[in-house]
Image 1 (cartoon, rainbow, N blue to C red):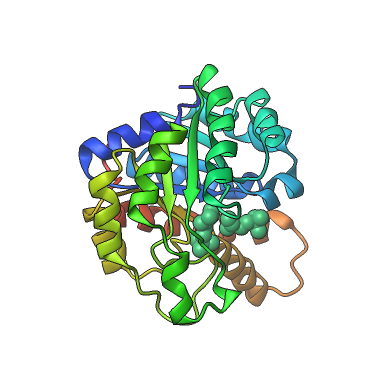
Image 2 (image 1 turned 90 degrees about the horizontal axis):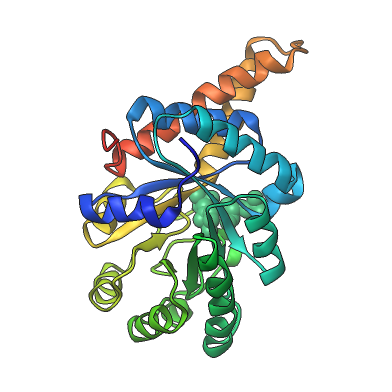
Length: 284
Ligand code: G3H
Ligand code: 13P
Ligand code: ZN
């Protein structure tokens, strides 16, 4: 099977009322862990590359890893650009066979976000690549947002409807109270806002900052219409816990494979746990 688009995968999720895990990859072991999890759980899956991943591994390596995985896999796999920063970067992804891109114009004011996102949609759709846009601010846990200011940063439902309509995006990342990274305090999601957005936006909705969100909140978000959930930090933690455990067993170990095998196993189990939580297991 070749790589499929996120649009295709999310259409299945919409139909089935579940969410697809979108996991960030940076190297071969992370990718293998995600794919093994998807195969074992019979779940569709999205591999996504962040700005940091592209810098660390290089776009060609990321694309080659994902394409190799898709050729061998028996479950649908998409390759997605996470938080794309420019039109030029999107074109580079199109040239490297990505099947989906995110353009994150959330730092721009509303009209400029629409203008730049639409530019990306117009070119990506020509080659059948789907596009995710972002409206509202999904910060980092380190951003220290004071509660009074929080509401202003969350996605406005009527703007979301206008944004989806004006840009033609295939999926929309919304800000409802999650943040990137591992939370120091339990995140409080604005579920009413999510429902209001779902009522006026017909395309699949995306939740960023999925790591560390309590299981019950994830399930409620899916019930209310979230169809793609991004997970990075919890895989990073599983990876580094695995390496630390291997070193604790033998601090003199010099064989990278002996350090990375437990790391890969720990990531695979974490990814499986998320796929089951999202209800994506057994869907292929
Ligand atoms: O979207 C944010 C990712 O979780 C982290 O990105 O790989 O660029 O540090 P990074
Ligand atoms: P976490 O690192 O909080 O899981 O967020 C991942 C993400 O949203 C990537 O875009
Ligand atoms: Zn994100």
